[in-house]
Structures are given as C-alpha cells and as structure tokens.
Image (tube, rainbow, N blue to C red):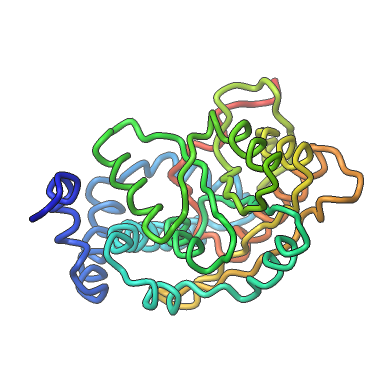
Amino acid sequence: MLTMQRLKYFPLQALSTLPLTVLYWFSSVLYYLLCYVLQYRKKVVMKNLIRSFPDDTPHQIAHKCKAFYRHFADLLMESLKGSSISYDSLSKRFQYLNPGILEQDLQVGRSVILYTAHIGNWEWFSGLGRTMTFPVYTLYLPLSNPYFDGWMKKNRERFGIHALSASKAFRFLLKKDQAGEKNLSFYIGDQSPPNTDHVYWTLFLNQRTAFLTGTANMALSLGVSVYFPQVTKVRRGYYQIKFLQLWNGQTSIGPEELVERYARALENAIIGSPELWLWSHNRWKHSPE
C-alpha cells in the first residue's frame, strides 16, 4: 500500500521512472519552449551574459544563451530523474575523480566543507551521501512552493544526506563538532545576498559582485578544510567532479581571502563551461554604491 508521502508525489515519481532517453526527448521540447516560446527569464539571461562577456559578439552571446537553455532543460529532467535513479546508475553518470582527498581530511579528524554553486547538476550530489564513509549534510533554503520544497528535500536525502535549514546549520554543526563528530557539509555560495550587510565585494565576471561571508566565517570558526567541486559535463547526462582545495583548515587566513579563492575558482569554471551556470538567476541585484 502506498504511503501518504509516496501518494502525494506519485505524478512526479511516475514521470521519474521513465528512461533518461525519453526524458531527454522531453528536454528537447522544453528547451524550445523555454528559449523561444515562453522566453523564460530571457532578459535576465541576456543581460547577465552581455555584462559577463563584454568582448563577445552578438552571435557568441546568442550561442551561449541557447547552450544555457539546452543545459537548463536537461537539468530539470535530470533533477526529476533523481527521484528514482539507482545509486549504481548515478555513480556512473556523476563521477568523483578524487574523493579520497576528502576522506583523508576526515580520517585525520578534520571536517570538510564543499563550497559549491549553481553550476552543472548540483542535485546529483545526493549520491555523495553513500559514497562517503562519514556523515554528509547539505544546507537548503526552503522553496516558496511547499509541494516542490518537500519533493526536492526528499530527493536530496535519498542516499543518506541530511538536509539542514540554513538558518540552523552553524549551531547544529558546532554541536556535532563539540561532540567529536567529523562530517562533510555542502554550501552554495553564488546566491545574490538579500542585502549588502556583511558581504565581500570583488570583481567577478567583469562586474563588482557581492558575496556572503557566512560560509567562510563558519569554516574559520570550525577549522575545517574547504573544497570547491569543479564540475565538467563530459556529455549529455554524464559529469565528472574534481575537488579543488581552497583552504586546508590550518593556515592563517581571513574570511575575505577564502571568499576570494572561491570566487576565482567559480569564475574559472564558468568561463570554461559558461552554459553550465544558472544565468537565469538575477545575481547582480546590488551595486557597491
């Protein structure tokens, strides 16, 4: 007998069981609708691309725009598939090139923060909960729609990751640290800050950009190692992730320098594969003035 939760999400769950080959056919249709018919947030996408790549020709900007919508449509279908994909299939499609570097830190008694972003397919990181031999936590901001918020949270926790409310994360992780638990936690750092209090300004994609410093302050307080997961899309539905260390948790560093290292790593990843970043997000809401 179906549980109430399974019954609640049955329509999405049923679609999720379709093979990815079929879902990618839907993705091709969705790409056309988003890019040409609905023109979903297209003014924001074009504005962000033009400002980020000022030396590009209109043809190059248009090419980047279409490539983004193709990937974005694939991302929506892949996120849907995340509800039913097996761990074995996910681990073949979402490969970690050097997970041992994270385990080494954890084995010597140092927790790890993954300072990630809306690039590639951040939803498929859910498999890391079973890949690692230590507890894994992910921070999340609740979606405005309760139905989809519950759906996304359920999917992220499928393989053992524990989702934490961002507002309660530091207190929770501090308590775990004091109890002697070593763990890995995810933080997405490319959101636009709600205001310009407690932010760090830097030149990012040719624009003065505000970054929140909360993750950096937390990392410094807990003395954890910090890594940026560099995502490469090998081909449709296949990704590779290489973990780049931003801080070893020991050397003297300030929060602004840690954020700067994150911004440079993210910028390099975006320049290398611009279609993989979430250009529809209104990242530059604020200016230094």
